[in-house]
Length: 639
Image 1 (spheres, helix red, strand yellow):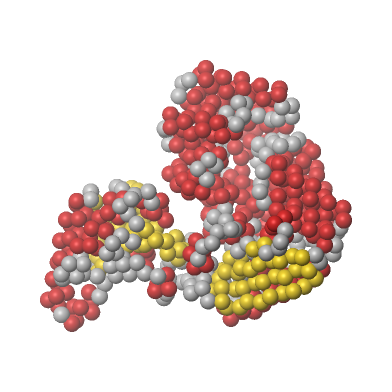
Image 2: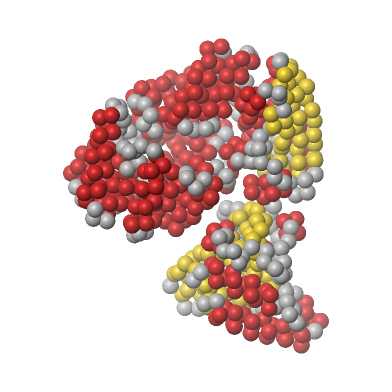
């Protein structure tokens, strides 16, 4: 029998040694532990499945009950005679067959318990997500840990209620493999008199981050997670826990005329100790040498722990010589990282100005290609026009420098979203990841590729890796939530959505993620409320209506669903060139009109938007594969 449960492991510490010193006291403590366990587990609606030696395994229907029970047990065991107990809790699968009890959830709960300290209660991130809004439960994050026989690092929290032991992370050394050579580069502070130079300090940070990424054996947290701490005055040790790193690089940039002063310092995250610091006063023309110098020093400082010699691998060439071109490039990077259509167009203007001054600027050509791929895939301009520019600019970038990862990623985007050349896309994505292993946009496209190829579990694995490398990236976390939906793991998708909504309660993509997950779990009334909020946040009467129409159709509100279809069609009249066939196909399918569904899907194929091979794998289209026309669509999509 398989079930999802909150799994509690408890283990008495020092029992064997006490048996040798005082057998009577050891037996007394063990008897008392058993009495407290049996009374408390029953009180909090749990069940003890197994005793083993001086430990036990219990399950609960609720993580909240499991934690309350654990707190009660630890507080009782402080009374005479005190019993030292380690406790670990995880929510996951448990399988019971005859006398055997096993499952991934059991394994992970056991590893968490072994990490805990006497008198402490450690819980996984899954448990934390369920208890975080409980006023009667206090927690403290301990960070990520690499546990034996567990593939991905696990984020651990300690229960910190009164009377519960809470260790510092440093006290847990030796119990697990610690993250080594993991570095975060925090945004360098703009110390210039002109606040407009903010883009310059951000750009220097990103360029330095890219230089460090190319050092073999060094794992560098991606930009989006590092920049989440921009302007926030937080303790370096807390930042390191959230980013799962053991070292942090921070600094400042002061630009005045043609001179620049860069201050950089490398900090050991465990104790806040400065490993190294340096000031650089240079002419702007020497800026690239400074970046190389800083990255080289850091590599040498980490040399003793690196698995390979710290030599930059596949290093992209710095082809820019003109500082005006470099300045335009940094401005473009500033706008590009905002990832909105309007800012993307501003970024393109800046990249074009950089290229006009310095035609051999490979990185500017590559990011211009990526910006057009974004506009084309989002329906912000004609796909035919956008992806022709993508290929032109990406080819130019790679002709100038084949080691620019963004050029390969842009090419992959064109192959995936427009030409549907799946094998070519995969090859470009692999090249990009070899050159820039932590590049989140490349991971997203790779997950997209695996969905198209029907490898849904692989898509989840890819995005879980991306989130591990870039834990605070809203884009990566939202994409992981979508991959969970493709795999029909709706509870996991809802947890991802809730994480995003903590960051921004009005994040449309997160609300939409939660809405689809909620609906496909069977609660379409609640899903409709969420979709209506998505529509409201678009601030446009004709946009954001797919979910509203689909939910109404599922609820039998045919007139309201048809009203959504009418508004979508009206939008194509008011905004010529806008393609909404993918949305129309979804609502018609929910209404049960399969002929119109296939008509609009074929329109998507003719117009080269929204690859059918991708969106038809979404669970909301379940049942469509029974129709012979589905296989004709796959043939047209090159599958």
